Length: 397
Image (tube, rainbow, N blue to C red):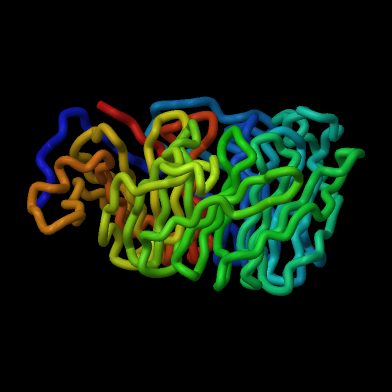
């Protein structure tokens, strides 16, 4: 049984395909917050910066043309520097920095070719300078095993990293605003920590683990502690994403479910004043395999997931409705399917979040990362084991 048509039609098309010669898995993507620049990192041990270009040195303009946009790699960094796979990469939201985490257990910070003054956001014209310059500023030691994820706080002054060693480390921007130094060690997870993500405007950190839980961390008098433990998944929690205001969060797991949570006040003063979290929607069996990645657009409100079934799915609170099949590509876009939330056949209709699009064969292999463009809530990027990056465009009729 499939959902009934839901009014407006949502269309998804592939906007661009970015490829490299190595064809090794690409694990992570990060959009520059202030420019149309995408960073990638993967098994070839390199960071790459990509921009859309029609003519050399000129940024591509928006177009309704169905032809694929041309993107160029304008910078490659890390040759002979990173000995093992780069598992994660992240832009600093306020400063011209990148951070990456490696299977060699180190966290690296890299400065783009710009002065590192506070709130000096990366500038596209500087990034496109010939040749673009990237400089290693810090090699952060602390983890004892593979680094799985890195993430900057909204202020850009804190960097979080997590690892197979079951820990989360916090690193603080130095006085000279040129490097980062160890700040705190967060322990509590009993298995590998797979992912970290910051609240969009507070110093509240979320971590996801192989122990099937999500933990929330806050600071009190310079001491960081776990203020909430979210239990709802039955297997590894791979990733999480906050909504625009940080009042809700979505998590994905090896158990193939997508769970939405909301922040609620503690019911008793004995527990403390920190907020608690409760589930508001559990969408079961959403992919045919583990769900590895999720992102929540702060512009459009859309949620995108990717998984081990090579597929990408899109969700929304107010569903757009059925979608049409992608043309001139081998990917297949399916209408929404039922959401298994309870024994009642009609229960899915009352759920606050609904699946509105499925792209089969989005990659020729597992989908490792999906990220919304922070400047356009209807554009997102994906990468996978096939060594390819795809840019996708959503339109509503």
